Amino acid sequence: MAINAEILKKRTFDFALTTFKTVDLLKKSVANEVMGKQLIRSASSVGANYRAACKAKSSPDFINKLKIVEEESDESVYWLELIKAYNKIEDSEFEKILIESKELEKIFAASAITAKKNLINSKK
Picture 1: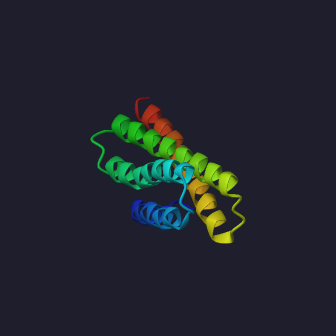
Picture 2 (picture 1 turned 90 degrees about the vertical axis):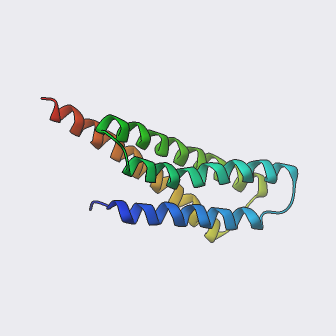
């Protein structure tokens, strides 16, 4: 089942918003502040860069922007996993955010591959 752009825009927006709220709930520490800021940057970048990809000027531009979204999704997974390990989090709500981050990463990786194949096929 293909996921349309509007659904992905909403998912990436909701992912960033939920991540912000989750970071606000972390216990106050220097480590959590650093990790939280990094996570907020990458999580919000997923949606912002996806919206930019939707406005791409060309297929190569779209692919490049999608790769950035994929990288930011992967970075979000990293920070979420680090925060989980550091804080010893065993919470189903936190796990949902981590799962969503991994799913978004897979979606954008697959989308970039498909877009590359389509570009190559259009040149034949």
